[in-house]
Amino acid sequence: MKRSFQTLFLICCSFGLSAQTDMVWDDYGLGFTLPRGLVITENDGDTFSAESDELYLTILPIADRTITEDDLASAVIAMATEMDYDDLTDADDLKLSDLYGYYVEGKKDGAHAFVIAMMDTQSSTNYLAVIVFTPERREQAIRLARSFYAYE
Image 1 (tube, one colour):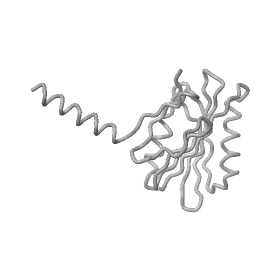
Image 2 (spheres, helix red, strand yellow):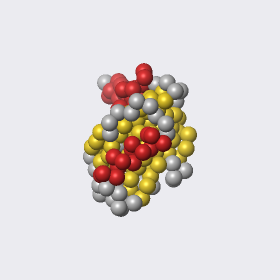
Image 3 (cartoon, one colour):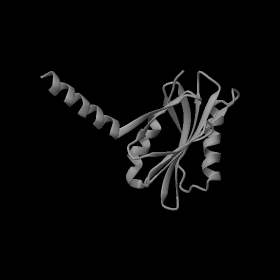
């Protein structure tokens, strides 16, 4: 009986690990969950990127204590406009544990994207993130955006 339970436990753990990967970016105190299939393409302390054929994530940290919540809304709109995204939604707030931010959704050349600006309310660290996705992966992109959290 004990052996059957251990085998079942290992199978369940293996299945859970293949479905998603919990990531922590120790240099900047940011955690998030990558969907299955994303491969880390850059993690050099200045940029984090991961991608698959249908989903792409990049995160850039910015240390600046003077940034306010209002600055984030302006920054996210300016970023999306600078990247030439069409059909931008209005900026909407994003509340995630100790992170606060804004995001917009846009389209460009058939791809969709969430452009996100977040601030850690307990430190001077801020983050710019872009999640590019195919329309079929929108729900995965939403789950990824909602998975961000700050930690010490």
